[in-house]
Image (cartoon, rainbow, N blue to C red; front, side, top):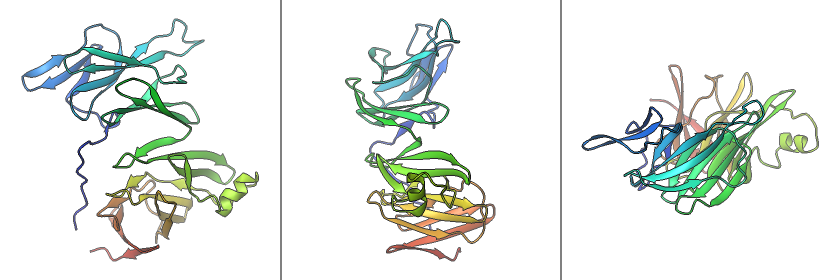
Length: 282
């Protein structure tokens, strides 16, 4: 059975997965065209994170504004949008931006740009209108920010250090999904008590039609689960038979079939109603 490949009109463009046809050379943005490399900027200002829009007509990148005294104030950065002819379209400063380095830019879809800035304990993620530059939404806190294929949901991880180890949780948009608000560990946290379990969540991956987001949850060194969470709040999970490699990634065949590979072992699962069943690997 072949792993499902999602075909969409607009594929999420992100600087976490750089486009080899867009690059920075000597502080300038370059683009590979049918006739060869084309220089799009010529101002010698330091730039980072160049990214082409899904329709291939615009680019976005970060411009560094060095601080005169880095000991007192961090560098400030701006987001610039230009067309593929090099014409400047707009400069964007996200609402509530605190001067620091952007970690990632996303073209979420044609009209929405995402930008992530991370501090020591958390990240901020802004969603901005690519046409006007206005900030549409600001997400405070969390890590990862993994978009669903239809761009309706973004999965983000929250991390709290406890005496029992790291306690990680999943939110979809602004909704607490896993552990559920009624989980005994979440209740213990809410009342300032020590949770019984640690929760170390693996990478988030969406099923082909965004029915589930899948990940692993290591609650101890010998207790690891594969977990599926739906945007509607349904949770299904199954304990893995052995302690696998850390940070296994769920691979989807379709919305009901998934697998995880640890070394030479592959664990396959089937979603059967409200249950997750392990099936024999072929």
